[in-house]
Image 1 (tube, each protein chain N blue to C red):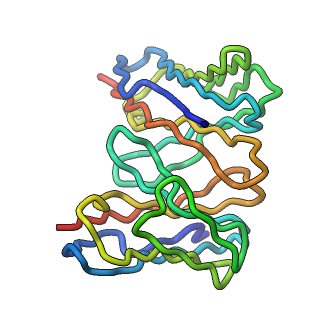
Image 2 (image 1 turned 180 degrees about the horizontal axis):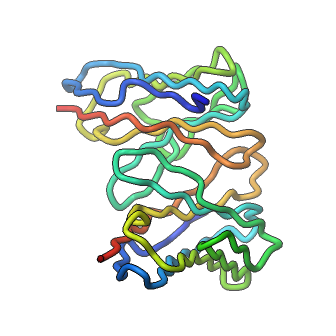
Length: 112
Length: 111
């Protein structure tokens, strides 16, 4: 079945780059997402990438997709304390229906 | 913009009680869903709907009912609450399976 895996924790110093990694199983996924969840709040879409792309950059965010290895990463440049949150990787398998699969979330700690 | 609105934000239930989590969206999205979030397990799909009058089970549907009488509303019913249903619940909506918009979450404790 479909599965999305990511490490649970990441700690970085303020100003450094953060790289959050994710692996997924469904090679037919058309969309891959990164969501951000701040404490006590819902998930907000951070960025997404189509499966026919290798890279997407949006200001401080860079998404890299390796379809061969089914590996997705999110790089946050110049990480700030406001970036502290849980980051969820998600895939939307091409099942013909509505079903987005989420990873367990990576909790990013930013040390001042 | 209201987006996805879910209520209540916090609720404490006794084992065996029933309750309904409300969810409404004002974006005319055809897809709506309910997820539960538990530590270390990410989001798990409970039920989803692809349009008014159409619902289907997700990954963890047991103990929950849903209905979709209108495009806007998608309530989640707990029939007989159990401590295992202590969780954070998120309602979400999207159009044509694209970007999902989430509500703010409902924190439910069953004692």
